Length: 559
Image (cartoon, rainbow, N blue to C red):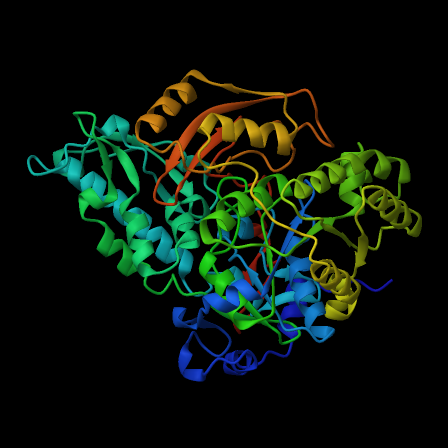
C-alpha cells in the first residue's frame, strides 16, 4: 500500500488561486479587501449584512471526547464546506486560527488534514496575518500599564499588588512561565510581585476580540477588564488606567476576519483562536457573521468535545451574538470509540467491535447533550484505513438506535467528493426545520446554579465541590455584580469529568472547582476544574524538534 503524503506535502503541491479571485467568487469587490500578499486578505467589517446573517444557515461541527491526536473536526469542517459546494450549495468554512503552542508542541496545526485543508497552510499555522501577535501585545501593554501604575509615587490608582489577577501572555507552551516574580532589582526596576503567563489563546483579549461586534463594542469590553482592587477595596478596571485607546489601536487590524481558501479553491474565513479547554473555543462572532453575510451555508467548529466547545458555543457565543445554529455535526472516529471502550494506546488502530460497542457510551452521551439544546445532530464517522466494514455497520446501527444518522466521511482522502453524503444529509436535516435551538441555562440564575447545570446535565456529575479559595472568590464575584454572566468552564478535554483518566461515560462523580478567573470584559466567569492549567507545557518530544526550513524557504516537519 503506498504511503499517504503528509499534510504539508499535499498543501505545498496544491494549485492556489489569487485571493482576489476567491473574494470575487463570493461577490466581494477587490477594493473591499486588504491584501496580505497574494493568498491572504482582511475583510472589511462593512461587508456584514445582519439581514442575511438571520436568513442563512449556520452549521456547527463538534465531536466526541477526543484522543490526544484529535478526531478531525477541522478536517470534517473543511471537507463539509467543500462537499456542500460540490453538490451545488454556496458554503464557506469559518474556522479558528492556529496557536503556535500546539503547532510546536504535540497536536500540530489547525488547517485541516489530507485533502481537506485550508491554504496557504504554512502561513496559517505560522503567524498568519499577525492577529495573535496583536492580541499578545495588547494584553501585555495592559500588564505594563499596571506595573507602571504601581511604580507611581502619587497620582496612581493605588492598586493593591496582592489582588492583581491580570496575567501576561505568550503564544507558546512554556510551563516555566506559569508562576513568576516580576519587578526584581532596584527601585527603578518596578515593584516586586507575583505574576504569571497564560498562553495567548487563553487571554481575555482573545475572548473579547472573538465576542465583540465592532470597534465601539471592542473598546467597551476592553474597558470592562477587571484588574484587581485598590488598597481601599474598590475594583479597578482597564478603563481606570486609560488603557483602552492604546489597546484598541493595537487591535485595529486584528479585528478584521481573514479570507483564505480550501485546497479546492472554495472560500474560507479564519479568525480568532481561543482554546475550548480554557476559553470559549470558537472563532469570532464577526467572522461567523461575515460568513453568513456572504454565503447560504456556514460551516464552523468548536474545539475539543461537545462538552467543552459546543456547550460554550451555544451558551456563550450564540446567546451573546443572537445566533441560531441550524444543524450540528458530531464527529466520531472508530479508533476513539475503541479507546473509550478500554483499548490500550497500542491497540486503538486494531479492529475490535467489542471495544467499539463498549465505547459507544461516550458518543451516546454527546448525542444526548446536543439534543438538550434542541438540535438533533448528524454523526460524521471520520474514516480511517483501519476501520472495518463490520465496525462501521455496527456504529451506524447504534446511532440509529439513538435516533440519529451516522455518515461515513472520506474528506481526508477524497476532499469534497468524499463528503457529499454528509453534505446531503445535513441539508436534509436543516430543511426539515425540526431543530429549534435554545441555551441550557438562564443567565439570571446564580453562578453556582449555572455550574451545577452544566456539571450534571452535560458532564454527568452528581454534584459540585468548591475549594476554600474558590468559595471566597465566588463571594467576590457576586459582590462585584458579575453573577448574571455566563460561565466558561476550564477543564480537561480528555474526559467528560474533570479527571482525564475517566474515559467512556463516567458517572457518580463529583467535579471540583479549584478557583475562578474573572473575564468581565469578555463577559463571562471562568471556573477552573481540577488540575487544569491556562499555560500548557511541551511534551517530551515537541514537534518543534522535527521542523526545518531549507535555503529555498521550503518548510518541513509542519503538520
